[in-house]
Amino acid sequence: MKSHIPFAIIAFTLVIFLYGKCFIFAERPSTWSGRFWARTQCSTDASGKFVCATADCASGVIECNGAGAIPPASLAEFTLRGDGGKDFYDISLVDGFNLPLSITPQGGSGCQSTSCAANVNAVCDPSLAVRGADGTVIACKSACLAFNQPQYCCTGPNNTPETCPPTQYSMTFKQQCPQAYSYAYDDKSSTFTCPSGGNYLITFCP
Image (cartoon, rainbow, N blue to C red; front, side, top):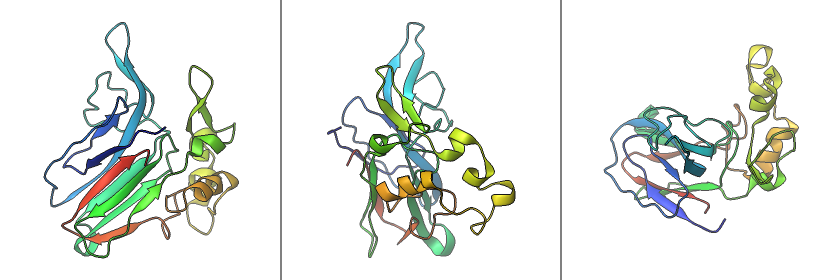
C-alpha cells in the first residue's frame, strides 16, 4: 500500500478509513486519553449500513459514536498530560494488526518518534490471519483474540510479567515492529514520553 495518510491529533477519538488522503487539524486538548485507528475496505451496503472489513466499530454509520475498534486493529494510544504532567504515547498491536502506522511528535523537545512500518499481514501465522473476500490476509489477530487462553491474554494465573512472557506469536509482532507493544507486558520498549504541550502527527501506511 503506497498511500500516506497523515493527520494531527485532536480532542476526541477520530477514526479514518482509507478512501484516500485525509488531513484533519484541530486544537490540541490540554488533557486527553484515547486511541486512534484506521478502518479498511469500507462500504455502504444495500440497506445503507456502513461497514468495514477491518477495525470496524459496528455503528452502522461513518461515525463510531464512542465505540471502539473491533480487533484486530493497529492502535495509536495517547495520554496527554498524564503522570508528572508528561504526554505518554505508544503504538499497540495488543489488539492485533491491520495497517502500518507511525507517531511523530512535533514541537516538543527531546521527543522520540515511534512506528510500526512493517506489513505484519505478510508474515501472519495462518492461525491468526483474517482474510478478505479475495482470500488475501487483511489483518492479523493477536494470540489472545485467536485462542482466548491465559498464557496469551496475561489473565488468571498468567497475570504478571513473570508469569506471562512473550510467546512465539507476540515475538513475530515484535520482530516486525520492535517499537510497538506486542502483548500486554511489553511496555519497557514501547511506551514513549514527551513534555506536554507539543502536537503529534499520526501517519497510516508510512
